[in-house]
Length: 202
Image (cartoon, rainbow, N blue to C red; front, side):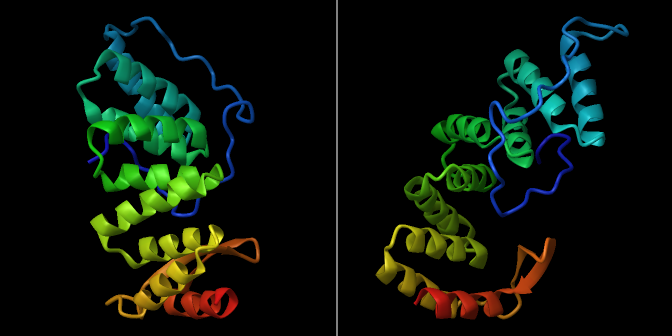
């Protein structure tokens, strides 16, 4: 369970906002107050920032917590997810790589890495991570992302095989994909999206 994180991790990668594009977050207190020590202060800041949807301040608080208590790995996982949530793809990828160097099979962190790499145009690396992710999760969506990256890399034969394999997925008739359409976030049946993409790509 990732600590205090109550945000929706969106599947589609976001436009990169790091580092210069983001508005600098307000400074976080660096001295104890209210009788608490530094760690407790930063935990309170983190909880409040997440409650208000202030992800930049949450990231600052998490960096303090990770520096003070590096053995509490769940906070570093949360830091990667928070960076990804507000589109800081460079930072999200950097943290994800650190985590995966120690534990290479964490699905949530693999997804952070793959989404960040895709958003940054690192398609070959994104494909490798989506392939790892699909082997672990077996999810139809991750297989779809593998096919998408193969198409971007012009590996059309592999893409066709991957897309055809999706037809044998047990949840292909019920799975839905969240996508932007007509300026709104909407969910489409996966099979409908598959047929559209297959007709266009192949």
